[in-house]
Amino acid sequence: GQNIDQPTEMTATEGAIVQINCTYQTSGFNGLFWYQQHAGEAPTFLSYNVLDGLEEKGRFSSFLSRSKGYSYLLLKELQMKDSASYLCAVRDGNDYKLSFGAGTTVTVRA
Amino acid sequence: DTGVSQDPRHKITKRGQNVTFRCDPISEHNRLYWYRQTLGQGPEFLTYFQNEAQLEKSRLLSDRFSAERPKGSFSTLEIQRTEQGDSAMYLCASSWVDGGTSPLHFGNGTRLTVT
Image 1 (cartoon, rainbow over the protein chains, first blue to last red):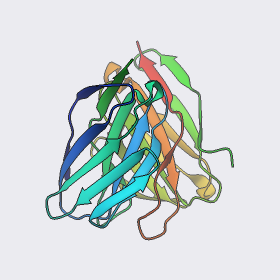
Image 2: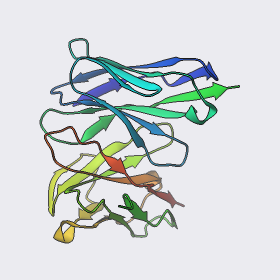
Image 3: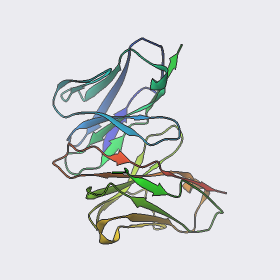
Image 4: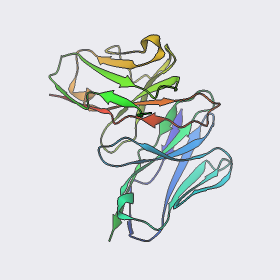
């Protein structure tokens, strides 16, 4: 099974940077995904890490350390539209389903 | 490609009634997943299919829940004798099997309210 932990809430100012941490314990590992979910909408895919290191995609970056069971999502140059829930999800090594954390609600203030 | 579509978007039903939801995945995807999400929580895995075969069912999926994917295309999720605890957002997702790198693409969900 999976045990995935991430902070419940974070608040930041428009234009700032926010880092959302995720720790996981898993019997197998085949990748870590970050999703963004606005209230009442579907989760949308942001990033994928399977090897250690940093993946950068525009204003969003994601980091993975497999030995530490740790990942973070970095949101730079925050915009009001970035206010959403951010979900960390782990893919087990034995199948293709994703197990999700409870999500981190990010509120961007002017 | 219109993405994953789910129908209906909202369903209000009385306790004890049966409900059925439909999911149409992205056409070239061979994997289809059902998740349930309650307020303030992440999606919880229910079941998934590869083509028409149901490969795994979560312990969360009681005997009142059944899912099908005839012909490996659309899928239905039926809940019999609904209970108030079944109230949640039911999300469908699809993906391509490619060694594990393919993300899940989610539909907008069906919000079920059991009164």
